[in-house]
Length: 234
Image 1 (cartoon, helix red, strand yellow):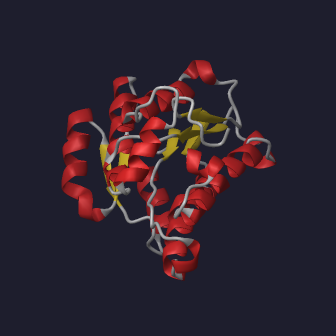
Image 2 (cartoon, one colour):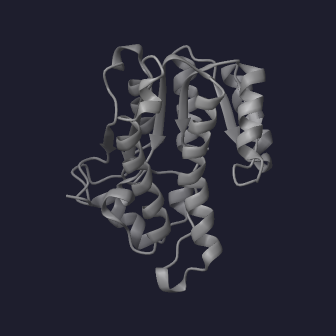
Image 3 (cartoon, rainbow, N blue to C red):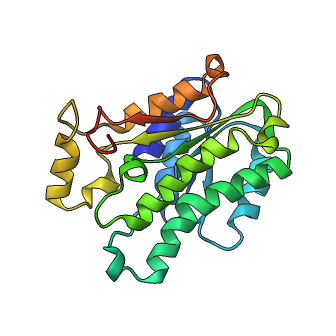
């Protein structure tokens, strides 16, 4: 959906054979998408206990090795910290952050990455500046930004020929997920940048394409803001 769908379409346009992952509940829409772009569908809930093993095994069977990984899966469970139950905190931190780290570790251990592969993570302006009622989401996305910077200089990455990792920090993007944000917060997100409007999923998809392009092989450890010069985090 949203950014993920637009990214899949854009990478397929650029010549990639795209494996699209979504929760089983969205399988019908996922199959329509992969038919359109001649890709593969993986219907797996990343919050399930065996998700890492299942993703790694099915990727090996479908494509053998991978050139590009886009860690785009994410959820929000917004509440002020004082009112946030533990399970909402854990869900967001697990899916948005912990699963990214564990999937990358599994891919490295199973030698799934081709030479000069690219890992592209989706962080957020919320992870840079914070956001009211989103302490769990902001924490997860700040973790992604810090993880990318640290992993880019790690021995594990340097052992893989040409492997790079970068992150994108979107500002307010017009998606189904952001439609669930309260009206006033949405309007502030749209107007608190130099363009006075929200971004579109294609803005993030084209940035993913930029990092995935063979000509971007010298880019590593970056957290690129795609936010219309948002005032947040300045």
